[in-house]
Amino acid sequence: MMRVSALTFGGAGERPSRLRRLSGISIGLVYLCFPVLEIITGEVSGVRAVWGGAGLAAFVACYIATVLSPRNFGDPTRLTYWLLGVTTLLGIGLAVAFGGGWLTLPIYLAVVYGMALRPRLSVAGVLAMGLAVALIGLLKEHDPGTTLVLVFQVITLGVLFMGVRNTRMLVARLRQAQEEVARLAASEERLRIARDLHDLLGHSLSLIVLKSELAGRLAESGSERTVAEIRDIESVARQALVEVRDAVTGYRQRGLSGELDGARAALEAAGTRLTIRLAGTPLPDALDELLGWAVREGVTNVVRHARATRCEIEVTMDEEAAALKIVDDGRGAASYGPGSGLTGLTERVRAAGGTMSAGPQPTGFALRVTVPHAETSRPPTRGVR
Image (cartoon, rainbow, N blue to C red; front, top):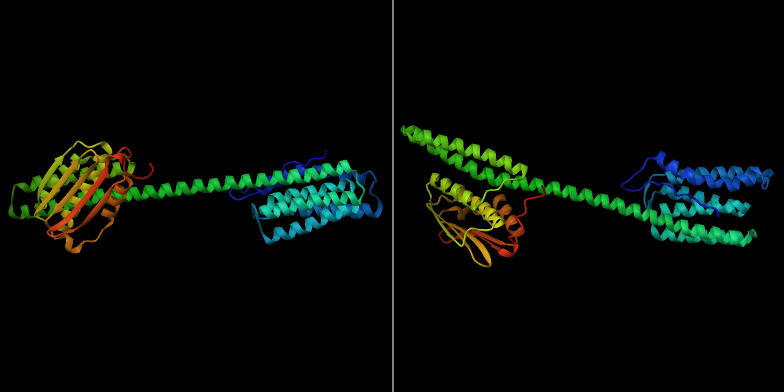
């Protein structure tokens, strides 16, 4: 039984070099020794041998050119179609003209069809080559058993290489999917860092500005508190630097109690009286961190925009959910518009399965966050680390 070895073709996503493809097809071309032996042994002689040798050389050249032509799997270019058409004419023509060992040529055509064409065209081409071998065998009165073996090889090798092409296409798509996942992960990480930096620096810089203004006024009046306020500014700046580093490395963990302490310091510097009410705490770790972020964002907005004299923070937790409410009596509602801070907080809360609302009230502004306990086992989304 005559066999054709596996060939190496380039495909989307892999793009092996032409040298690799050429080395792969060279092994398969060894089986062209059957028509060559007919010429050498004199079975095909005279003018027929000359034409046969020239035709075989042309077939091999066109076959190699078809294999090496630029294309993706199942998506040949116009050049590939032209080369494949010429190769098909030469293969079928030589098989019809000489019969015998020349019937191996349609096998190579079936392999190329299986690797280069779209699925429907591949199936049609392989079946056409099988039918062509059977008809040529009958026309040339070729041995029925050998003809049947050749038809079987055309079908099986064509199907085999269609499977090889499909497998390599799946591998290419898998690699593309992996690249897309990596790209999305990197994009999500950039968003996480941007969101964390906004939350961290927005709060800290607002506090630094307030304390700097206070220190300036105290310095003008010659108050002894000036040095203390400057030291507070230094402390806040150092803490902000530490938090930024932690956020970039992805290991920042600051809970609700720490944020409440920071809120008290920031609001006192802004001249706002703070009232804190806690019920049902302590919170689970995931909720503690999430509500801490909410307190930071809410208080930052109060300091920046509200010009409030009073602010209330209420945290409650029952058997079903944990809730946070921040209410002020300021004027921030007059120019309300959800910025990147509230947008980022909304994303965190939704990722934890909760809800958030923020908007003007009759006497100020209110921020409300509610997160059910069923989702607290999953920490808020902060990107891929």
